[in-house]
Image 1 (cartoon, rainbow, N blue to C red):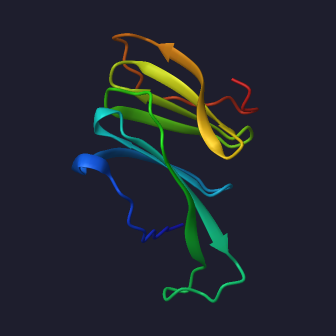
Image 2 (image 1 turned 180 degrees about the vertical axis):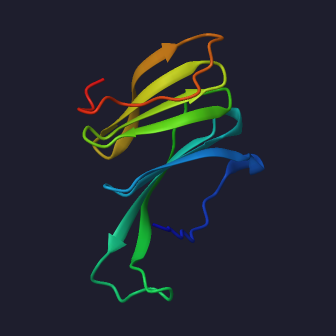
Amino acid sequence: MFVYLSKKIAIPHNLALQVVAWNSAQGWIACGGESGLLKVLKLESSSDAPPAKAGGAQSNLSMNQTLEGHQGNIMVITWNDNFRKLTTSDQNGLIIVWMLHRGIWFEEMINNRNRSVVRDMKWSADCQK
């Protein structure tokens, strides 16, 4: 499957993006980069709208939220599709679990690994852990 996204997203101070994660089931995109840059975008697809030039459905951004909590470069982003949670980790070992509450993303849990860098994260098959 190929995805083509053509949207201009404001990135402060021209910071470089380093990781992108897509929750295709619910239309969320999270992108992380230098200096703790973390943005969550929500794509609203319009199945009733006429097809776009390339033959796909048109979509609009219904959310463009910058999440604050990381200071180091974002290294890992993982979605929990079942419970609408997002887990992120930075170069300093800080892990944050974010939750969606009333349309806004909030920190649910913070785990500071200090100098231990996390290179990969996965939710269990039942998305409980």
